[in-house]
Image (tube, rainbow, N blue to C red; front, side, top):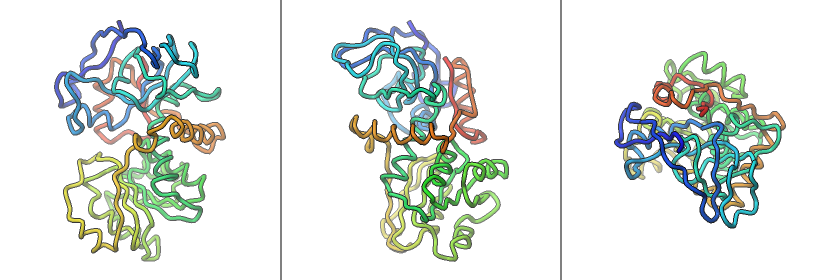
Length: 324
């Protein structure tokens, strides 16, 4: 038996309950994993509060790291004792032990600790597909990235700097702005005090940016569109303030023949080859020191309710993990 977090109904953080659950033996193509760290992400909130549907009672969590304890039939590229991490597969990372498809696991290199891996996989691979696939950024590009001091944002600041990309970020407080600047964000706009679209136009000489990366949602729409140059790309990849309301497609035409996309990681890491290539690039940047992503916030597994309350308060900066 292992402790797991289950939700029997959707709603506030208190709907999460710590329960005992049998782990079971791994089937063909699976491994049993003892978890050493669990990544906390805002997508977990969406599954808990019902924005993203799943059958109930349900499990939570998409990201973690741990040690392989048992191999199922046919697993040949992993061995017992391997340190691994993941950010895909079935829900259920909020657990002490679990059975996982081996194809979702990535072996961790020496020099990358479990807590960092558990906190960086989803966020880091998100930045990988945003910067290297959704729009292949080039040296000299200018972009706008909302929530620049969040877990994804701080990785984005560093990745943009490594690529030679000029990143303009938004944050809510001066303290968060300093974090983003220290991570490599060239300009930071306090959206609580400034009209960020007007400020973007000032910073770009009236031209606007080629891409806006928006994980905030309702609160930054449609003003984000006003930050774009003609034929620019609006990338909506989250809903921290609530979902973007329905809008007519003609709005994109009126704002300058804009492009819009709503990507997710599953589509970009749909094959094992893609997953390994993306994670290899992320790991190289981490090991080279061009990205530093040690989790800033750590919670005990038993304090999962407090962890979700802190995430929803939007006061946290950087990545967060739970330790079983």
